[in-house]
Amino acid sequence: MRQKIVAGNWKMNKDIDEAMELVVSLEQYRHDFSQDVKVILAPPSLYLANLEMVEEPFFELSAQNCSHHDYGAFTGEISPAMLHSMNIGYCIVGHSERRQYYHETDEMIAKKIDACLRNHVRPIFCCGEMLEQRNGKHHFVTVLHQVEHALFHLKKDEMKQVVIAYEPVWAIGTGVTASSDQAEEMHGFIRDTLINHFGEELAAEIPILYGGSVNAQNSAELFACPNVDGGLVGGASLKAKDFAQIIVSAS
Ligand code: 13P
Image (cartoon, rainbow, N blue to C red):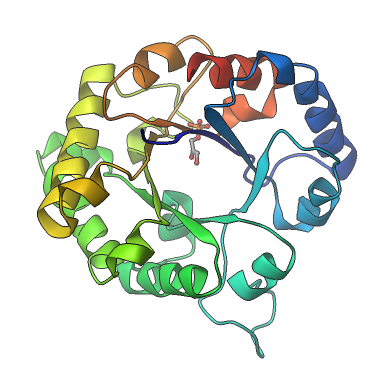
């Protein structure tokens, strides 16, 4: 059985008091959460150490970005080696906001994935097309290229550590969600792409999350799709009640 995952990408939101308050509020719902659903929180990196101190956490932690170097003179950067030294198990890599605003290329993203894997940090690799690409019917080829560039050079035991998040750019922060048919169609395509390259057994194990305007109203329908293994949630992960409902809907 594939692992179900609900991850909250807080992006650049909340001060430290609000961040800790959100964790305390979420904690109140923990008894509603199924053991079968892994909850991951991706706060701003500055707060990872604070969240890491929470006792008996119901969640695992992820960074939102990392360097592809391990150590050195790279002012402002944080490396997967450092994340691992802090027991941070995951890192989001290749988010469309990083591709768009920080000009991350497929080549950089592949290097970041390598850096995560050599430091025992599981990458949550993001892919997804822009609206023009979908309207031009280039969405499959776009996602295929992103997946090929980021993942096809990996060995099977490395690939096993990867979580994929399909996040159509037109659905991020817009309130426009992909329909469950659109999500399942693309997730099935990504799964087939993995089958062709890595084989059926391995492809069947890789969690593929959906991201893009997931909320407490639409999550159950999206997560019911056979190839949707949970979600990478932005805005709705900042509200305890909504995020808790989304977690529950994945079980
Ligand atoms: P929203 O849920 O706010 O659309 O953000 C999705 C996202 O980018 C998660 O990484």
